[in-house]
Image (cartoon, rainbow, N blue to C red; front, side, top):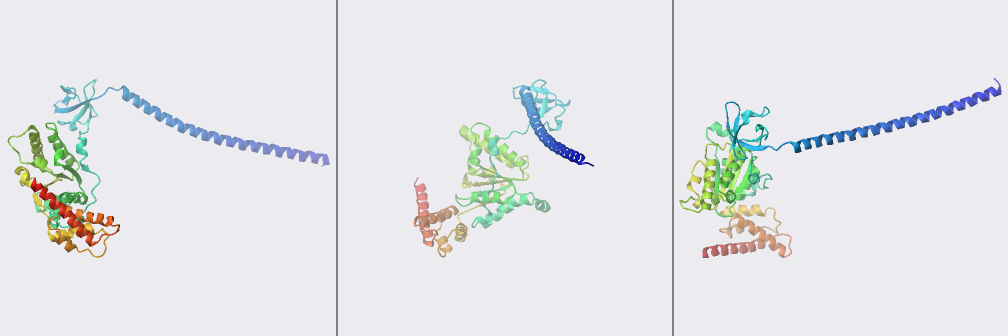
Length: 403
């Protein structure tokens, strides 16, 4: 082959190589473009899904806006032909049909239902209406108090465990023995002796729903409202069973009834009668226990404290010297002290002090240490606090006697 042919061949190879490189480069660009278009298509598909969901949401909203409102009613009676008599919120009683999607067995007297305005038929069963005020009585966050945080009161703690905690945690044992489990207990004693503290410990120790209220909160302004609140309180407890109802200062609603009284006193009596009816009426309490506290058991109505309503009245008096020592031990166990603290000495010089007084003594001793710039409490701080708190207590009692 001549030199000219060789040159032509080499030139052709170079041109082929250049064309191949250009084609390869073009192919890469097209592949990159395809990947970019695919990514853009995927993004558009996702955006389209969002728009479709928004469109469906707008359609549903538009249908709800265009739909006619429903009428609330309550069932009065169920007829043999499948229709029901309802009392509508508009006023009159109506005889209406029941839609196929509604469970006819759920339509009992008093059931809240929704009526269609056009055909006046029952199209939905509404949930039971509960007072927000009653719902707020349920204790969601349990108190950070246990029976170990209570000084003394060992007999009272044992009784509460037997009467309230045990029937809820192990009801089978009562069935084996063949006795009805207790319904509850009444805590009675002077102020500051630990009645409410015991209730908090029961709430923390038990696994049951704890519903707490004060007797004065059950008394309402309008006629019949107090009885309704009591009824819904026990209905809430039955729904949340096992449950414990704690009524503090029950003497506000359970005082002895009088023949003559004002309209307000008669409303209190209506509330009281509803309370004793719920405690010992036809509807069994079941896994609902009632715990109450008072410092005026002398004014309570005998119908409230008779057997069958409160199975046991637990007396909580002022602590003995041994119990005062135990209460001091409980309140000073987290206290930073200087040297030894003679708990027996403190118990002996606090004759007549309640558990609340002892707590105030320990608090006053801590404030005394802070005043003098110390970071720990000495025994002298505690004795000084005893003098301060007990002097205030005696002055308060003498002032009450003077009044």
